[in-house]
Image (tube, rainbow, N blue to C red; front, top):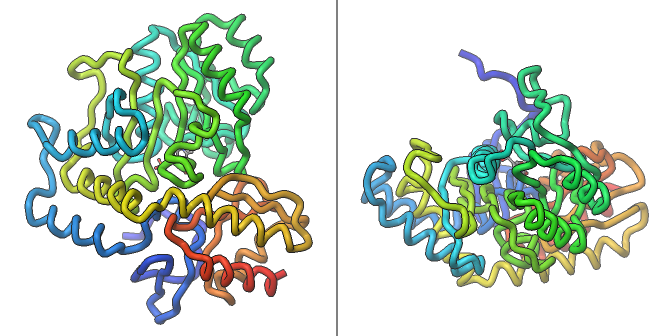
Length: 375
Ligand SMILES: Cc1ncc(COP(=O)(O)O)c(C=O)c1O
């Protein structure tokens, strides 16, 4: 059997990871400034994380959501503490798309309404509910063309106000506080505040998709916390498990659960919870949120000294560096010649940086030397 060939791949095979580095089958070392799409939060094969998973495998890897699994409650408590959302409820699942899918369903259950507002440039995942809210024709099948979604311009308060005034069947507004796949575009604090205010006014659920921008990456636990807003539902995945598939939704206390409302076979299994708990412990013990902010500032400062850059966007370790020329060739060069992984975006001139949160100044200096020689 062959693999279903849907991914454009670099011609190399990775077999090992350690901290900010990964290694191919020929023994080459690569510096990872992409973290496999923002997934590697605490570094590849962090010893504490590896140990926690090994211990858990020897205890209990899996049981379904038909019994109490104490690690779920431990994870909810810890996540509440670290994120500041102690009074919210946690629903656990397996991937970002699934988290958004459940958030949208929950908004519809809760309000009894059936349309959603999403924004131009948004990426929320590839399952039906998530992909209809994603602004990309290419990844929508005919069955995903859903008239239940209204796309509005990003950061346009007036358009949102007008739409919510005219449409009375909206159950949710879903937004990435920083758009990732599109090329690192930040929602303004004024826009996020307006979403919160208008959602309350119109009995609409405010969903923040923090799947890429959350989990400490921007220098606060959640990117929306820079704007001092409190969404009704916050979706998480990627950095949550440092590579172990685990995701979730943080849900406002006013949204009430009932048995059977949501569900999943694998979500919240002990091994996944242990991975997620270990990530939170490492983030806390090693002050990784502060490091993300600090290293992000240092990166920005270094990039401002380089010619040929049009704009530097983002916060902490979620950065989009827009060059005057398309970055495809440079990114290829960085991998092939200089052995550094970086990311691209829909915006063809933007290099997307999403490294592990524990990178150091030395890693940044190495990246900058190689980028300068690539240019
Ligand atoms: C903001 C955002 N939401 C949702 C998703 C979908 O996550 P997953 O690929 O885990 O389904 C992604 C993935 O890139 C994302 O960046």
